[in-house]
Length: 146
Image 1: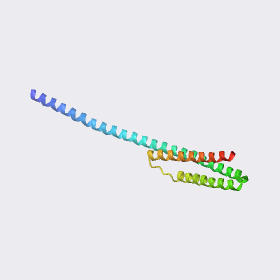
Image 2: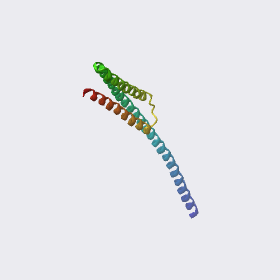
Image 3: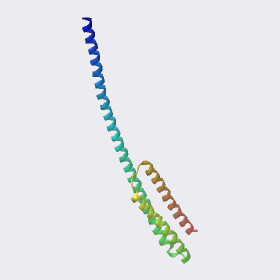
Image 4: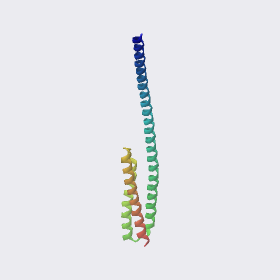
């Protein structure tokens, strides 16, 4: 009788351990699947945010480029009354600025998303180049007013 009780106790204990370990594995699988879904959602959200950020940056940059184009056109009409020597000098500088502005526009249109690091680098370089064109134009117009 003692052997039978001992055998049933051991069997019950082993069955409990097996059932506990089986449910634990299924819970682990469910948790892993849940974490995977959350990671996918986070990735999709990050990707969507990145796309939105790029579109906003692109729109703002296009507006700045258009404003610079307008400034260049306005300055061309202002230098029409300049002396021939100054006019040629200004036109040459304006042509350089216009080319740089067009190059920026092309770079912005041709950019393809290659990841966060490359996007940050592109944005930094693009903003720097945009600022340089703005400074060059300001310097050109300041010299004209003296």
